Image (cartoon, rainbow, N blue to C red; front, side, top):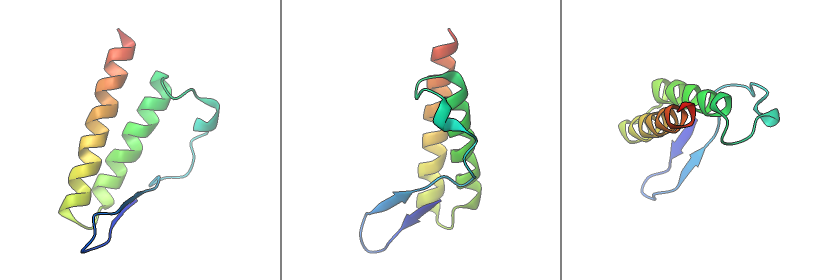
Length: 72
């Protein structure tokens, strides 16, 4: 979940879903990146502001790109 506290620019990022057991995954593994991408997509759907939704979508796209690069 992301909170944007007006009028500041502080963003707080939290997982939108319970832990998938990602503690056992390395940060660069394709499975970890897939979990993070899914978390960001879920957070984008649940975001209460356009700014938060946009940020989560950007992060999801970045994780998807990293995952595609690691598959090569």
